[in-house]
Image (cartoon, rainbow, N blue to C red; front, side):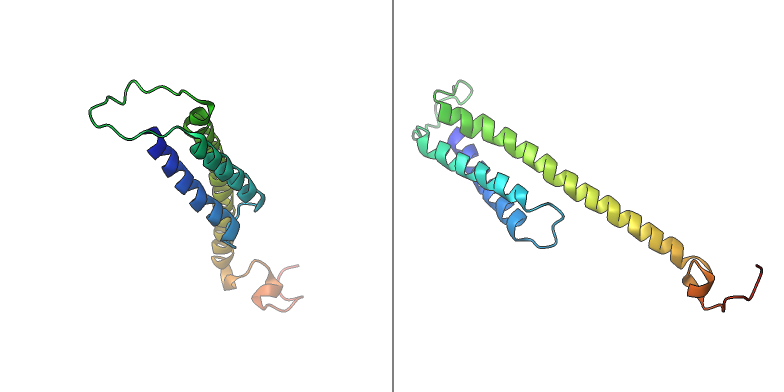
Length: 132
């Protein structure tokens, strides 16, 4: 069961790394793709070092222990670091969303003013006309 979870984690990390590295409009700095690539390599090395045994349906999975450091890395350390990386990625995405909403709110407020502008010159009124 543990190796299956580790393989799923590796597949998720590969997709995350590709998204961070290749999507041009993503507001996350590309340096975080290097962190994801480091997690992919650590997970791959840990999976190769794990002692994978054939699955036995009759055996209870509740009593499984982590025998080697590779299992600890693959099943505890890398998923914890992946969760931290996801927090960083979502923070950048939330910050970009908040900035976009703020710009949209300002643009809507500017469009709601008379003549769709905030100053007389932008509205097309000649300078010198109207109250001083």
